[in-house]
Image 1 (cartoon, rainbow, N blue to C red):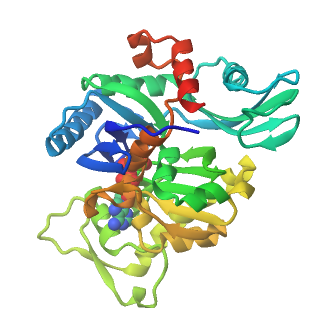
Image 2 (image 1 turned 180 degrees about the vertical axis):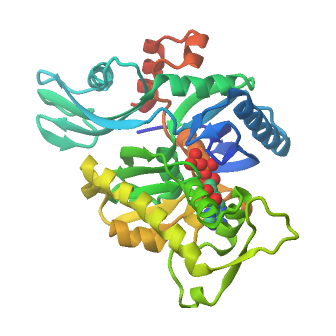
Image 3 (image 1 turned 135 degrees about the vertical axis):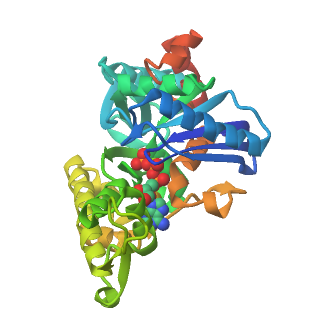
Length: 412
Ligand SMILES: Nc1ncnc2c1ncn2[C@@H]1O[C@H](COP(=O)(O)OP(=O)(O)OP(=O)(O)O)[C@@H](O)[C@H]1O
Ligand SMILES: [Mg+2]
């Protein structure tokens, strides 16, 4: 039902460990990335801005690098959101049609009612995704052109805490960029990494980043549930630093070079050099068997995946996702992570990276860039959402009705 968009598009993912910006050219043949910039992120904790000035510098640098590479100057960006405790719920609405033929107006009426019943609250509305229609109680994929008495719509509503989102928007605006819209991070990661069959038949995507692990359940081509857990690879690193009394930078290096979440038979024979906190490089490093490292990493990953499992089970959407789970995000590169996920979640795990973008360099096409790549996919393939109470829109003077109207026009 949606149209695709062409031209220059830009996306910004303000992650807990890195900020990245992709600039791309979209046309009928697909999305071609022309510029990429990424920077270590400062002033961001578990996806939330905690230091405006530091975050602003990271964003500026990432955007500048992407602009230099692509040779384009961007004015607007689509921004990924994992702050403000994003939450999902499903809203069901029904409007009476009185036997007339259903057209755009009737569908708009149902969606507008959903928008109103999405609730006036202190939370910002990030997405309102139509996930299904019914006509006199029977499921239909597109009700237009049909006759009936009652048109029902099922809408997936995603909201987040308004102030956290506003801080993110302000930070982006301070870099002289307009926020074109927000997309909740796991939704974007799913759009970038799931193959069409997974999107349709049902699958869960889990994006394990530095400070958060976010998940989205897709079914029937759309996201039907999302959740974000404030734990990620950074917690594994600090466990290693604490457990081995080593500086954080050394713990990060040890994790990426020798870390494993599953034990190997050789672990008691192989040793890792661990510099100790406060000691100079001249003093002798400690030798620690790899089994000790596994003993630190494995329980943390188990804890994270157990949280994923319990949140999924509690949501009730687990059954739609079936047994397929796609694991992505920087921290999914830890050897053995997929095995721990398979055991704890009892699902078939596929490790994935962004698959839908052309001309993306190997080094920046990895799983850590799933969200940023998905933001581009969202911009090009999905209509702009009628987001509510965003500072940027208020500044533009576009009223809610106008934004909602555009969305309906483009969506239906
Ligand atoms: N080769 C690797 N092996 C193990 N872990 C890795 C590897 N490369 C990156 N990581 C880990 O991935 C994490 C960063 O992932 P990512 O870049 O997806 O996070 P982010 O998007 O910045 O954060 P978030 O999504 O949580 O806000 C870090 O904890 C880092 O240690
Ligand atoms: Mg991320």
